[in-house]
Length: 293
Length: 293
Image (cartoon, rainbow over all chains, first blue to last red):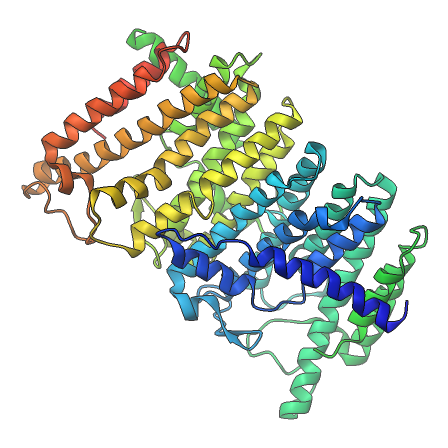
């Protein structure tokens, strides 16, 4: 797939996602400040990787119109956004900036930020349950998949490991990344497949791709943190331990990270072997493996 | 319905609920501390009013065995528990005691308490989606009802009003109570009806009963706060404004509260007029109206 075709499809998915999200939480209710807080983080210009995965998987699964899967795609983005708002709270990572903007609690206060996250999680399930064009079976499968991926042995478990257990060995770090990142990307693929009523085989292949993509993404992230530091501050690789957290860069070194990202990306693409028309997902994996931000 | 029969049924519902909840989050995972935190609040001896409503409504709706509705009943209790944990956080009401025990964040820390709440919310939807004995239509209706009741224009909206807007008039206070309390009790009735695939008429009647019960419950709560203060500290009625919040006791006075609880309880029971076998719900409303704790 050439660069233009890839970008055109990316733009179509992203634009539809932005339009859908932008219509949410606009009512003029007495608790409007809550909506403002939710919209502030929801519309702060993420990559929309999860919605893109859902929409492309729905397309590959043979959905009539991929736009019908937008409620599922955006439900994932709501859960992702709630997790970012709560991750940034003073009692979590205590971050004041995200994507170059003040974090939610810096702008709206801790109370409202906590409540905005809580509300976004509930609203994700509302979007799924109310999706107008999809079957009951599809919606229920989506609820099941999202709840498992984001719950007590999913995303939240990953966050617990991240925040409470410093000095990880490779196994713990792999588990952490699996729960915190891979589970939600896998859910993104599964929700797309559910929307299209795809076969179990196709769903398994796309879920495997998404999960490997998630691990490669996280390792690339850890590497970029280190490379960024080298360029900006001249710090040696592996010294960025301000938070005391072990990263893949610590365990593998920069070259080791590069090799692992390559390997995982190849493996992710290999999972698509029997998936027809998979050029977009292959191109997506290759681009994420080489991204510089 | 005589007192013994009422108590026997209450006990059956409560016991089944406790057993069901007690089986959750017991795995020996590396994030076991999260499970401990979730279980600490989940099993801290609440009234189990929401599960009781769900189970009784399922029974009235003609479900084969009311135990089949336990996943729905307990999903409501998970959401209720998450809301209590988050409500108690330092950035919310900053409470150190609940039901005579240290609050979740006092025992497990703010980080874990926030995450326990987040996980409980997701797990509620997992329980619904995985309920073994119920139909897809029932589960989807339950997801829709719970998400609407607890989301951005439901329970969270009520909490926003409660925390950010002191000095309420009666209309705002009624809206606050409606969103924060009544919506979830209404959902409890709706989930029971969904589990039993009850008719729209029966569902509407039971939802109306539950909503009126919620308002009566809250007014009785406000009254008990004041009566409790009088007995314990000799403070005059209406002076308990340590948090600067207006309550129904401020707006109506003690006698006004009593009269309003009576009126709402009568109205709730009247909503059951065409519901056969409603003695348990009538007895429940009458008991809640006279409760002293």
